Image (tube, rainbow, N blue to C red; front, side):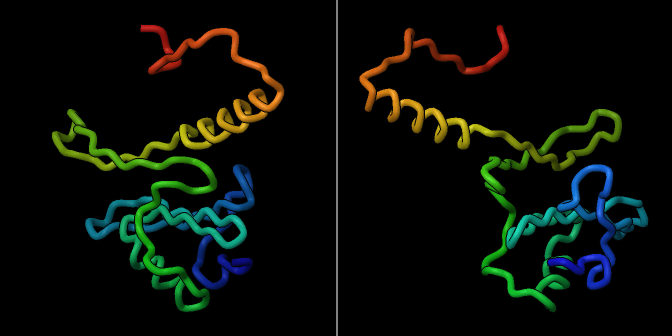
Length: 134
C-alpha cells in the first residue's frame, strides 16, 4: 500500500514509524479524533471509529482477505479489547491492550527444545503470574 496518502488521504507519522499513517477525522457527534493505519508488507491494522468504512475504502484499490474483523493478533503481538468505566463522564469506553504473551511462550518453547537437545535444564522451576511483586 505505497500510496495511502493519495488514495485514502492518510499522512505518514514521520516522527514515529514509516509504517504508521494518520488522518484527522470527526465522529458522528462532531468530536475530533485520529484514524490510524498500520501497514507492514501485506498486513493492515486500522484504528477507526467506523472500521468498516475505512476497510471499504481500502478494498476499492486492494484485495482484502475475508473476513476482516477485530484483531486478536498482529505481527506476533496479542490484542484484546476491554470496556472501561470512565468516572469523569460516567460512561463506558472501549480500550485495547497489546501484549507479547504468545510470542514469549513460543520463544521459551524454542529455548527449552534447544536445551533439551543438549541435555540442559533450567536451574529452578519458578513461575509467576505477574512480573510485578504483590
